[in-house]
Amino acid sequence: MPDIVTYKCPACGAPLEFNAGTQSWKCEYCASEFNEQQLQQAEPIEPEQAAPYDVREEEPENEEFNQNARAYSCPSCGAQIVTDDTTAATFCMFCHNPTILADRLSGSFKPTQLIPFRVQKEQAVESFLKWSKKPLVPKDFRSKAQLEKITGMYIPFWLFDCAVDQTLNAKATRVRSWRSGNTQYTETSHFAISREAEMEFVGVPADGSSKLDDQLMDLLEPYDYKDIKDFSMSYLSGYFAEKYDQDHNQVFPRIRNRVDQYGERRLRDTINGYSTVTVTNRSTQYQKADARYTLLPLFLLTYKYKNKDFLFAMNGQTGKVVGKLPLCIPKALAWFGSIAAAVFVILLIGGMFL
Image 1 (cartoon, rainbow, N blue to C red):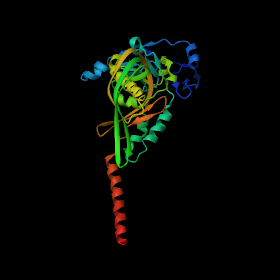
Image 2: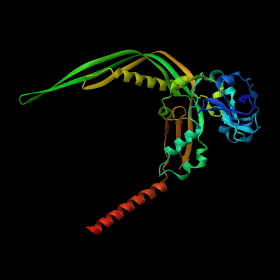
Image 3: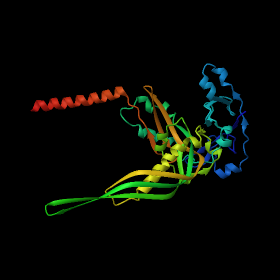
Image 4: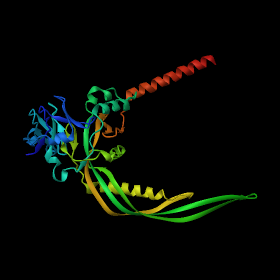
């Protein structure tokens, strides 16, 4: 049976949650706070054996749900916690007890590092309201029910450290013009250029979740790696967390593409003083490519409108926001109609005075 881990307050025994603002663990019941050293010195909590709930008996007709859903008993209130097969940390919807599914963070699924949250949920909500304050969004997009859905999550990432030998070949021209008497002369010189360098790239990221859009994850960068810490499950308390479903070999083509582009840009920047430069070919030989399984923080909100999914995401460390806003068609028609009416009135008044 799977192990469920919860972190309890050493003072009163209530659940502890990681506080991004103070970088400590706080008890919501007795208001006690503990730093990492104090938490480690406290009596360790043995994982509880969670009785699995047979989801297949409840929904025999839904094969996909049966294959991917898992349910466990909350160690605090006994309610059923239903997750999919990639969720590694969650909380009980009834008593809000933070729950970490330890078996999903073991073996090859155990991260080596993480970056803790620095942005609090209140800040994420404030940023969402500011970002979404547009006249043409649907009314319920900014509703209280929507705000409650903003979720702090740890997303699985692979950070690659790469050592490469890269070569680049290019054609360049240098144009010189001058006038002699009434004649204008132009001289174009052609050059073959070659560059070669040994380069190291540290911490090139690629998310390991097939559920999330890769382009969106790229837009949330950069993360500041100075905050990276050795992995401890205690940082997950109070947040959702996903384990990877794409391993380092599956995401490596994305890493290769990024390293190729970074390397070409750096070599291209060394070619100066020409009128035109055209890269003809490049090659990259990898001497080393080591991957570190790391969890990175973000806040996430999904919204379905007119059968389309819209998403708000925030970097949980830096506060950077990306997303796409829905457009309310009736509001848009009314807005453009009011503009057209105003323009018509102005033209009509102007015509009366002509």
